[in-house]
Amino acid sequence: MEQIVNARRNTLTPQAGGEAGSRSITRTDPGLQPLSPRALEERKLIHRNDSVRSQADAFRGLRTKLLALGRDRDFITLVAPVQAGCGGSFVARNLAAAFAFDNSRTALLVDCDALHPTQHKALGVDVASGGMMDYLDGSITDLAAIQYQTGLPRLHLVPSGTPRETAGEYFSSSRMRMMIDSLRGTQSNRHLILDGPPTLDSPDARILSDLADLIVVVAGYGQVTVDSINDAASNFDPDKLAGIVFNNIY
Image (cartoon, rainbow, N blue to C red; front, side, top):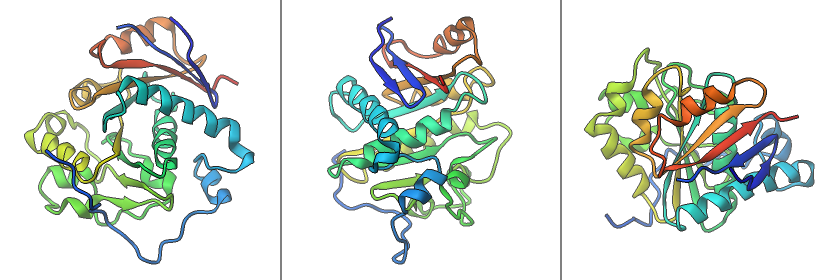
């Protein structure tokens, strides 16, 4: 397999193998100010300053590779860790930020780890009104109510919402598919990043892969074996599998 990008403590290695609207419908706070570089670093988010330039460039490189694979369309990317602790949420969050760096694009990060959601805490977003799982079970009917600003321009979050022990039946439902289609069609040049649960711990990541155009598997460097990586990758359609990110190399 050919190495194509070195990311911040990450390496991506590829494997062979309705009309969009113009208006964003998101939960907005008119008083919300963009986060400072220091606040972004506290949230483990890349930014444009020199202090994290190498990390930011690495995620831009990852974005560029995905854009090439996706032929520059508004594709959906599933980020799926091999197992818990591999840093899948970190990679998903910063990949979404990298898409949001482009002034012509927006990014929507969807936290699909129903048992252990983390993105709302990492981003410091108050999600008292609920999230995706609450929308899928019908507790929330307004899709705009589960889309939150993050303090990073052009990056919004759909939090997981009320934790669930099992989520597969929700992810395979027609309501889930309609939700994803609606989120993608909100505006042109919008990229959805699905932060998936650990691949080897449940079938949920495989179920979510049916909704994605591209899949990135995240392996914790020195944490998982080659066999585990292969087992995780085998859960997905090889035509969708963009590659493997090795996280925490140093």
